[in-house]
Structure formats: C-alpha cells, structure tokens
Image 1 (cartoon, rainbow, N blue to C red):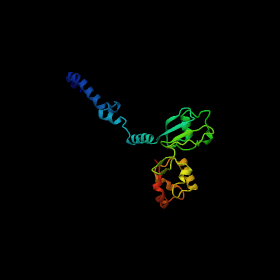
Image 2: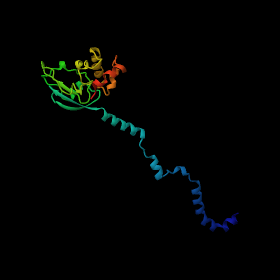
Image 3: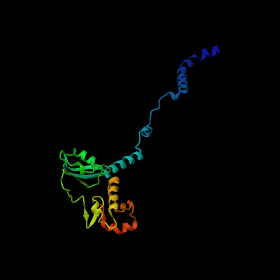
Image 4: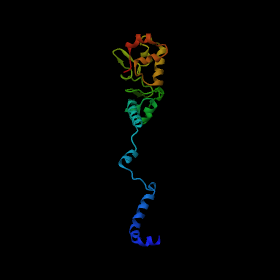
Length: 206
C-alpha cells in the first residue's frame, strides 16, 4: 500500500482538488439557499384585485349617487337655496345645512321631523304670516293630486279618501319618505286594489 501511494503520489496531488470540489457540490444542502423568485412567482405573489370588493365599492358609489336628493329652502333661513341632501334626511337636517333659521323665524309651524324628498320646497315663515303657497308644494298635474306634497284638504279630494286616510297618507310619507310609485298608496290601511283602481287616475308622485 505504501509503495502504491508513493507510485501514484503525483496523480493524487493533481486530482485531489477536483475530488474535493465534487464532494462539496454533492453534499451542499440546496435548501439553505434562498430561492430567487421567478417572474411568474413574483406575479403570483402580487395582490390581485378582489372582484367582490370592487363590486361592493361600485355598488356603494352607485347607491350614494342614487340616494342624493335636492331640496329648496326659502324664507327665514340664514342661507336659503337648493341643497344636496340624502334620502332619509329630515327638515331639521336641511335647516342645519342652511346655517339655521333667522331670529325672526316662526318655527312653531315647521315640522322639523318631516322627511325630505327630491324637488321638495321648505318655507320658513315669520310669526303671523299667512300660509305661503308654493306651486311645487301642492302640485296638481292635469287635475292629479301629488301624494308627496298635498296637504290634508287636497288629499281628501281624491275619490275614496276621507280625513282618516288623508292623515294616514301624510303620516306614511313622513315616516317612510316620499312615495316613489302611485301603487305604494296601497300600503295605506283601507286602500286595496279595488280602491286603487278608482283613484289611480287622480294621483301622481311627480
């Protein structure tokens, strides 16, 4: 054995570095090296838009625009004019948006809890002022009574509607907002399909 080593000593000296390199490559642990992300991996790791989230955001924005209404406030108000409000807002919210009423305003006659509707006109009077008639507040279209703006007396002119039903219509719109379709009058107790057929040509919501 000793003679063999002496004989091949030079060959061993030349080949030993290559053997060490081969052993190093074979026994190194690949898991210790941090993998370099490929373009495909990088693209997969990037956060992708969630279709559901985008749809919710779109629906919310659309709903926000749909729920906007425009209301005109006049009379004894600090900043009269047309204000952009939301469905469900009440007269008290409109007055606050307009800077509040003036010192000479008669707030006793104003229903602060009334719900607002699109194209509505709110008038703030002075004490002792006679009822201020605004054409749009009691609108009649070709003899039709507007369910959203008519007072009790005008509602009673609708066929089949007496004092009790007129008050029920006013209470309904103050609690639920403006009528959107004339068919909604059937939500009033005592007004069914037969009654509706008789009065539908006499009412409007526009």
